[in-house]
Amino acid sequence: MEKSIYSAEYQQLCRLLRELRQEAGLTQVQVAERLGVPQSFVSKYETGERRLDVVELRHIATALNSSAADILSRLDL
Image (cartoon, rainbow, N blue to C red; front, side, top):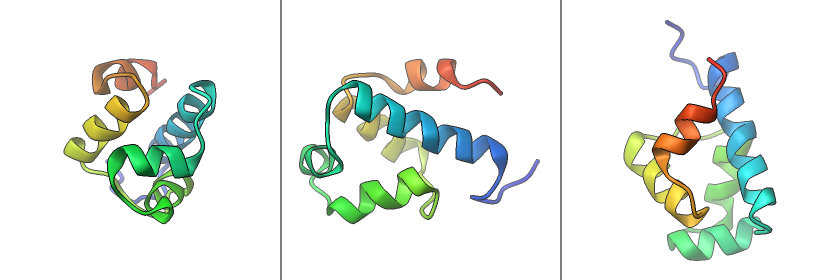
């Protein structure tokens, strides 16, 4: 199991989170405001520069009007 933020699986998660944000009609700034974090936080996890933990993923899912379970079910692993 590769643990790198550069793994294909992690990059797929990053793409999915970006797509979900765009589908929701939200900008990175809007998601950051919902999370109470700087816009750079959103940019870094969307580009794979920052690795998310499960708690952060849950908060992001809520900000995107989704759930962590829904996001994980959409991954093609």
